[in-house]
View (cartoon, helix red, strand yellow):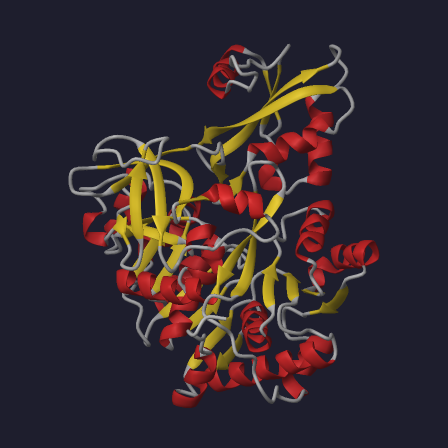
Length: 511
């Protein structure tokens, strides 16, 4: 164990500012002070230990839309030394089962919308399940946090212990859990707080999913660490988000979130000039959208990051939003970065290379994936797989994603995962999926499929199969049938040649 220990900032603020608002649940209109939330977390931790048998190192999963409950579970895990595993609610049961089995989750807390999925998981792997009502309704969870006994003694965590597993889909198509340590969260809060002006009077609006590192740490946990407050939206709704913005100082989203708000008739009258930081990631902001928010006195802060880095690596200051258009900014304070060639040697500014990072906000690896962890690091540097360049002033620009991942509506999609599902269909000989530009979602998938015999499958059959096994954002928006996939001299699929087939072949749209 490291000599450096993790300290519970919820408990600290409950002593120093007990009546200050900590968490506001927009869906249920519940408001919790630091004293309230500290007590609820303590009672939940006792319940998890005494009733469900959760001990240090055990994994505790959640399957729920956003609510203040998610942060209660996160900090209850801290007090027990358990590992928090928020599951992606958009995944199909087979995908969820794979993750639950991979991490060996001891318990699953779910909200009422996912009762069927929770039951299916319990039947298939025997996991203990507890209803976690999203509005604070009657049930074992709410009985525990309202009326239960407090945990007498909290577990002592080392700063480098794992706090959370954020599951992403690897390039092999298998889900992998990014180990997020306490150290990562603490240093990210410092990094992000410095860059965006988080203080005890900050009020963060959170609508990105809490099963993503962005939902947890941009800027919810930094605000809670500072003693500020966080409003949690159950899911993103443009009209409701726009109505809430004037009451907040910090918000983070993807371009689609800001586009949908800007398209509302109410946008012109909305006074959002009090926002201190409006962060964006996932794709560069279009110039007209930047202009629309700048006219309202709210310049955007473009960022770059990933689950493995806490997430933030670079931030573009609001003052440079237009003269550094397309840039993701400069590195945050406590991080080292370098841009290298294929041999790991630094490249001159202006040339394209792979971004590598190291620092206290970078993961130490993937859960149960020693080989993938080994490949992800070289000489202490984490290899992001993202191709970038720096301009003469040192500002970063993301050029391409070397691992073929594309981002659809702010969600990371890995082609190998989609390909693996389509390959299971009888009649499919081979398949490749590419990300293609899309006006609404940024990128969507386009599948090129070679089948064993003409007419053996049609696009609608493939779509139906995907809907059974994949989250909606992963389903291809178009399918092109081809005789075979082009390959290079080593036998690997030539993805550049694949893209040339799309405009020349007849695509079957699935949208």
